[in-house]
Image 1 (tube, one colour):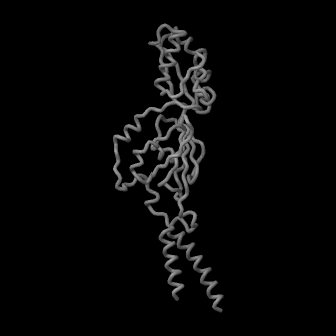
Image 2 (cartoon, rainbow, N blue to C red):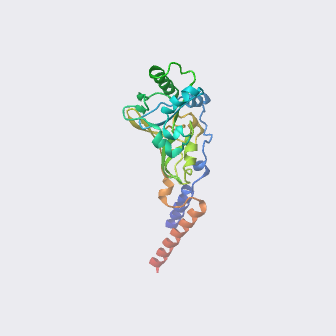
Length: 265
């Protein structure tokens, strides 16, 4: 009889510990941690600095009719014809090589590694002024990243290499674009692998805590890799919901009871 008591306790313990609760699923909960709004604003205000393998979209326009033909020389064919999309950016955009340079038409190589898009606009404008133009006041230069490219894998509904055409994307938006985290994914310890000049580094962020908004990894950067680990409960195989867990435990109990009765007979 005592053996059955311990068995029941084990079954009920497994039942209550294997179910996935709201605390496991809800983003940005109030866990009593302090949210520093100034830190979030500072994180948002930090401009991105271009890295190797980034692709830049550079547009040069002019309101002066005499300069329009000259400006067209500097435009890739797709941009000059007014046709550009996500796929063509890969071919017509300017890829940052291993030395941090881009190969710009006629202006040759321009080093952009570690510069912001605003700073790159200034560098292109100065290069035009030094070599071809006497006045750049009627020239308008726009430099943007050709999409924010990142990778999502693990316990998500639709991972892969994804691109969002936005200047700033937080990690929850990035995951939503990948189909969101599955119920069996661990939202408390999401891994962000980020590129740095000296290599890659792994960071961790708890997305169930609203303090995550203070994290420097809350806003993703180009070439980030987001890895979502499975919950330990998934390894038990007991089910995601109470009904699934109960069904699994009932099946196990039925098999064990049958085996016990057979041994008694």
